[in-house]
Length: 157
Image 1 (cartoon, rainbow, N blue to C red):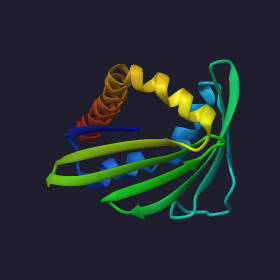
Image 2: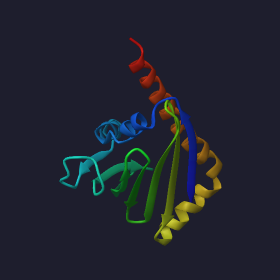
Image 3: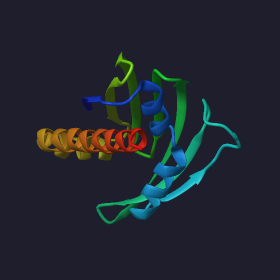
């Protein structure tokens, strides 16, 4: 199953990429929401090979995902892959500079089941796909709006 969203952001592509690659900020946000986040790699700088082990509650059970950064091309794209006991996940972030101060962010999230139990779970998600797609698009839009506000705040004296 695939979810995608596009947002135009009033900020330069480099700044949008820097915000998206602030992994420490995302780690802290996940921990505030009850997730356990641990970096598995030993890389000092962001780049291909960054790996996280994530544990978080879903429907009353703790789930575990190992996520790895597979593509890191500044300021155009980042690709992540994730693997859990029942699913394979892919997250793609693409940036296109529309002008010096405007960037189009395209986010694609894909999830594929690997087990029978996961396939059954996906069936229930498919029944509500429109609702999940709206929530996904709303989260991308909210993040883009927050990024624009930060950019405007940095430009103002």
